Amino acid sequence: MTEEIIIAGFGGQGVLSMGKILAYSGIMQNQEVSWMPSYGPEMRGGTANVTVIVSDERISSPILRAYDTAIILNQQSMDKFESTVKPGGTLLYDPNGISKHPTRKDINIYKVEGAKKAAEMGNTKIFNMIVLGAYLKVKPIVKMENVVKGIKKSLPERHHRLLPLNEEAVNQGTQIVEAVNII
Amino acid sequence: MGELRLMKGNEALAEAMIRAGADGYFGYPITPQSEVIEYLTAAKPHESTGMVVLQAESEVASINMLYGGGATGKKVCTSSSSPGISLMQEGLSYIAGAEIPVVVVNVVRGGPGLGDIQPSQSDYFQSTKGGGHGDYRLIVLAPSSVQEMSDFVPIAFDLAFKYRNPVMIQSDGAIGQMMEKVELFEPIPRLTDKQVKDLYPWATNGKPKGGQRRIMTSLDLDPARLERHNHHLQEKYHTIDENEVRFEEFNCEDADYVIVAYGSSARISQKALQLLRAKGIKVGLLRPITLWPYPTKKIQELVKQGVKGFLSVEMSAGQMVEDVKLAVNGKVKVEFFGRVGGIIPSPEEVVDALEHKLIGE
Image (cartoon, rainbow over all chains, first blue to last red; front, side, top):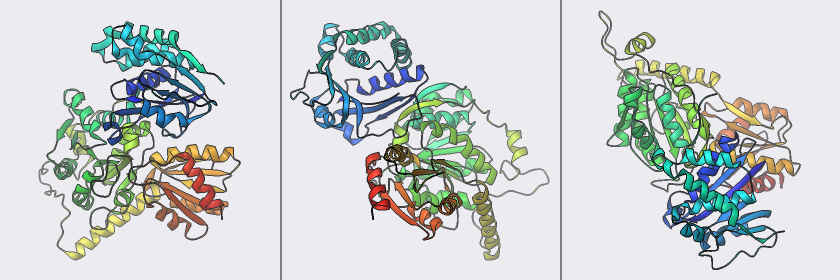
């Protein structure tokens, strides 16, 4: 199993930490992982993206131009990454803030109302965990118990009181993901 | 099994410096490697191992602090990125001349000049051909994963002290910034002052009773003596060249074509190799781990074995390709593919370059 993912959105949406938690979850079940962020000038424009690879084998290139899954959280990223999903691959997006919805017919498309749900839950910071939950419902590449461990490893200890809230957010994400186009 | 962590290359490097039993780190922050000094200052190793971490006033100061620390037989290291490493070249030449063991890490970014802060490999000439003046060599190790950012630190210290020679770890912004799984090695205790005295009789740690005053200098105004010193250095470099070449090969046994690439480029080329093999093209990958000494003999063996052509893949305008050409010596085709300015080539571009430049005509 090798899953090559791009997660892309605005800085502050928790794109990089979502990737980190996913990568840590992979380590918790003894898989190989890589986490390659955009850094430097491309980040200064307000967009952030990270390539995460989780695999049973040694990972070759940590930098890719085509992905099994794209998780897209703003319009700029939709414009940039919709075309990079491999045919037969998966695109997951939050329609909040998206003006042009994805149009490809050769990939599986799902949406998750993550921003809306986070607002309902009263904490916009757990948005990324809702999206992560939605992704794992569609592609259960790591076990939930290992995701919980991954969150624990990624959160600094002073924030560990927030662990149950984060777990609940992941759980909510698994429940609210909707299929838009299934091939 | 050692402790498993998810770390950035720069963080793994910093943790490895502490675990390798380093006595001192002297550095100055610069993107894309500032996490090294950030990690070290946060870890406060002076409270655990006693290792000194100091932010120097400049890169020129840090390399000269290494001269001083290394001359006393202490394990000292620094890290920087391309423009900072350029500032250190005078010091490195002096350190090589005075035969002082130090470890210097270059997390390379796009150049020339201030360039940008994106990953690059355009400092290959500087690392392997002597960025400073005079006839000298650095031993150059090129990690291609976060794991190797950790593993190569103790190896670099061992080589530095074995040969009393500066060792460069040449990484790049991609490996510095990305996170991967790392298995951390067991900490190696720092040497005591007595151990240093016993192990390194050359070290300037006080004039021994009745013994000679020791001087660590690169200055010798007597041409005959300086020529003898140069001959001694060249013999040492020859010994290193004979004994310390390191490389890794993938699918070279039956290869018609071989990609030569190191660091991040080797990772990208590994993916390209998989894509090419899937098309039925017999491609291998040779990954030099030491950029100097260079795996010249391995390349010559591959030529003898029947490899029809080599493609050097680099994040530069074509630097290592010169060493591939020297090794191949005109016997078969050698082509180059690279991206510059901080752009990372894609595996698909490498596939395309190999098909068109090596096989195409």
